[in-house]
Length: 163
Image (cartoon, rainbow, N blue to C red; front, side, top):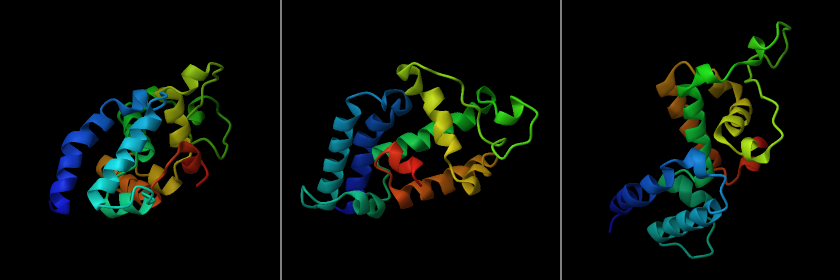
């Protein structure tokens, strides 16, 4: 089969299942297994060795790795529900350099910290300012964010936070 047909099969079968409800189940213990399956599928599509690194294969196929899909969908969720996420400038009147970041509520429970609300705030606060300023233009934001995530092809949230 051609590469276009294989990518179409991937998007119709695997991607649709992987991305359904991703922002809610990504932090589960089974997400590592799903990610391994996604990498196996990518290797099959490209006819690569089973030990080949998939980072460049994801870029070549223009497909986001599982963690990058999670970041993408979480940021879209935040934009869609931005009235639920107050800025730090709404919490106090002092003008600080972090006023344009989202307010992180205090949380002690790890379950809450792994949830979409809390982790979404952290993901948004670590987004580069050039992309963050595109929040109002949703189409352009999606396009630039997807290019950013494809270029970096993040394998973990720690990798995303370190950029």
